[in-house]
Image (cartoon, rainbow, N blue to C red; front, side, top):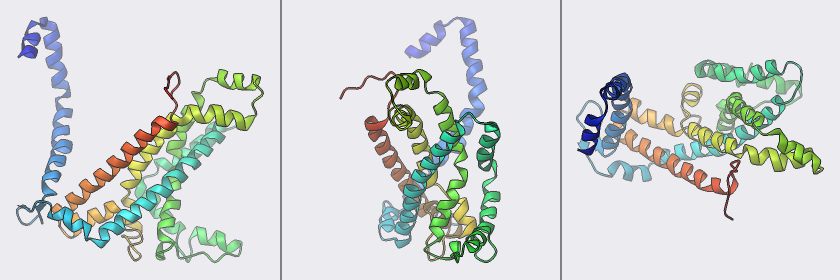
Length: 306
């Protein structure tokens, strides 16, 4: 009531601007409700039902979540995705940060080198996946041909349960150009007077890297960690095209298993329960990362209580 009275007391031109503003954002609001909020609410309801598309959903309570506990493939999918996240994300962060340090040097053609490292992130994921299928081919793939030149008999890669998941982890390093660009922006934003002060104190290259570069880059590292962790849990296209979850479920990623339940087995209720469990896992891990950031993330000008 108070808001309505306040709106009526506004000058006419301000009311007109407010109405026009809401009209301009109305398509976005309708899209948000229809394509984001609506599906979220529906999937939450379906997670408590038995819904097989051809029949109307029937409410079953927590039965879907109880089945998850006894579902061997659910635990396998969660294990595969967790291994992928906890291996590929740190590797990607370290590699992209190392490349960013190299790309921050004042050398000839540095713009060209930055472009070369960033271009793979612009390649459509399906096209890059087909490229890596050829690279990992055990008979005429580029990787095994290189290994053969140095006397190493390359493995079956995607065809072997021991090497399939490491192959996808290696492939994930193909797109280090995106976090590299963010790191590069952070490196160029570090005040030069900090390095000058370190030089006056007699600090060497390693001391400046450890005491200046790393602390000043921790907000960027934190950002890349959160974004890449969330993205890694949602990997789908690569295992779907390259392995279909095999061999022996070695690459049964969580989202791939969710897709199989929803669109191959038509167990929409069970797939919705899988989706909400994944949301809970990502939420908990993200909250832990945010909680830990108070111990290692440094913000310029921030006064901390120890």
